[in-house]
Amino acid sequence: MPERTYVALLRGVNLGPHRRVQMRPLRELLEGHGHADVRTYLQSGNVVLASPLPAGKLEQTLERQLAAGLGFDVDVLVRTADELAAVLALDPLAKVASDPARYLVTFLRAKPNKALVERLRTAEVAPEQVVAAGRELYSWHPAGVGRSELAKLLQPKSLGVSASGRNWRTVEQLAALAAG
Image 1 (spheres, rainbow, N blue to C red):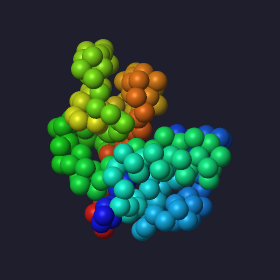
Image 2 (cartoon, rainbow, N blue to C red):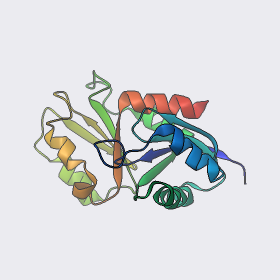
Image 3 (cartoon, rainbow, N blue to C red):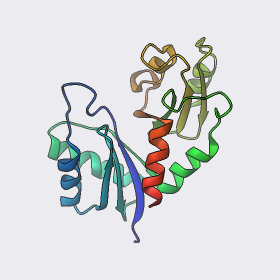
């Protein structure tokens, strides 16, 4: 099976004093397990790599390898280079999202159910906005993410599914890395 380029998003690493992961050892760990062309972006758990595995199997494999190598569990969400390019192309909040640091994409393990999408759509968080599309939630936080009521609703515990968010600039950079 030919190798495909993937972006692996590690959830919850390097956000505080615990669950610290240095990028060089992370790359070495993944390369040691046979993953090819391993590259990282920033210190927040963004990995681009090549693998012959299908995406779902790669998520499971990476989670198992990372738990063994790091000593703690890490949720991993995987998208192909083409899927990430499609996320950027859709850009449903382009007309309002004027600051890429406040425009987030929350990547989900599975497509959200209709009840969750409706709960997010009707949440009273204006001027913040959220749009569900496939396995992604696009959200605009004009006053920032730190005190955002919407951001609280986009946490895995609230969503009921594994999820990890990245700002628009990071998504653009990861897509560029994945495109080669």
